[in-house]
Length: 278
Image (tube, rainbow, N blue to C red; front, side, top):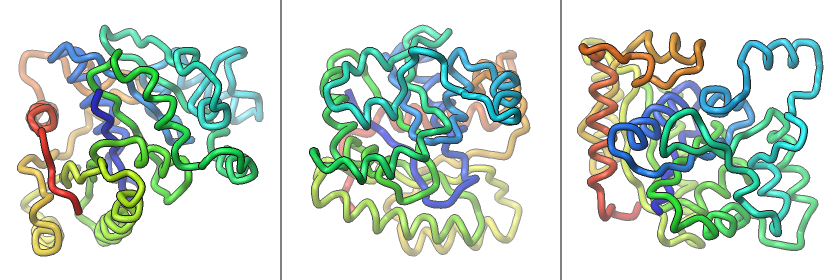
């Protein structure tokens, strides 16, 4: 099993859209066994792929109700309980070959509880659990939140490769710099971790800002920029509202440009065997 995490310290760069789309393509188009892990307390990946009803969740949050499904385990349970069986947290999705370990909104509170528990090293908790299923899946794909948190560090410590989605704006540039520095730190105790690559989302090559940001990143991190950019599409937002990944929503004969580009990006990710360290 290869463990891949999509991370950028900047929000709004397409991490969740990329994770949900690529995981679904791997499972349905290439028949790979995929385990999704939602490390983001916003739980957008969870809402897309689990039994969670987005509109019911909205109503519960608005009314201040408990959003937990009784008896349901999530990634925060794994992070807090080193003796837990990871299989208890894995949920089937409606798509063949694709399972998920969900997140809950309370994941944001887990960091403080982890800091208070000093019995085991904080950064290796997820890595330990994943070893129990390493022969059951081809890929583990992890979504992350835009923060340097111990939850995300657990993802990086368990990962083989990290992919950085980037938008063409100044905040994304800063996010890449912060992420690269964090990866270098995590590599000290996870030497397997490599940069899978940087790719642009919501791409419009006709804009001057796109050309400027691309050139800046090319100069700084040219070796890591992937050959595929993801174009702007309304299908991702529309699909999220009806809780369908991009390829399931854009299911006609003629796919939109972004869907085709995600297919190319997925093929590239599958073909990567060895990447250089930062």
